View 1 (spheres, rainbow, N blue to C red):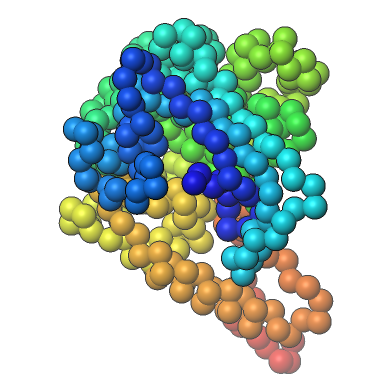
View 2: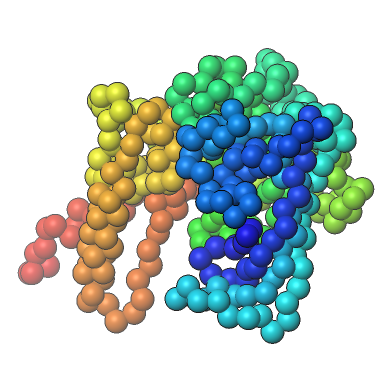
Length: 356
């Protein structure tokens, strides 16, 4: 039976998925969910197995899920047990872009008119950028094998998707920050800015200019988008400017570290932590960029370095009865580079004259 869960804990229940076969007139049940389904009570076949000529685990672009009805009956507790919900309900979700792609006879969500307008807006703010061509890397799991054209079109998709997400989220009251949902938004923004600048060669400050295209595209259906788009642009502009400076320094330094590694090598935890601590480079970005280069990161080593740094910070502030002020790496970078605050002259603390 199909069973939907939002995560390790939370509301869940059996579900009824609705899939669409673009070809039609055939039994495509073995292609549902990339073939990772057990039919008629049979076990789910292993990935790599061949069922009716299809390799399990490989997506078939002609068969896609467009709708899911989840019969919310339980709450998954931390211990893994299921507790009946006091008020069961049906949670229904349909993919707007997927349904649109079917109605418009397009093979990809990104080929529908909604994204076409955003791609044109991206092209308009990046001088010399070619049109979106819809190219997709053959090996989606290994970006290092993609051609330059495939990388450019992937960056188009990332920027278009992320400007939509951020415009809606900030309009609804969320804001990029250093924790919780705000940090999720900050990571989304940073990813879009990096792909735009590094791959599309977009000028600094390009991203917030795309807000108007989102408002134009969706403002009639979602009128709240038209209430204060200047606020949305101001928030994105500030985040973008801060990260752009961090990004330049970080990319340069990470490149130096990676040049020393052999093909398929591993960036040390010490160097990954230095990228964060000294250059304000988020570790998730270090992981992503190393993955794109066919490299890995010693994540356990990074976490160990982080714990040592926290311990040093706690020990250093143990003499104080009050709370300590801890600045994140990106904040120290902002103080030094954006605000021009000079480093504290700590020379006097090393020379002490008791007679003075």
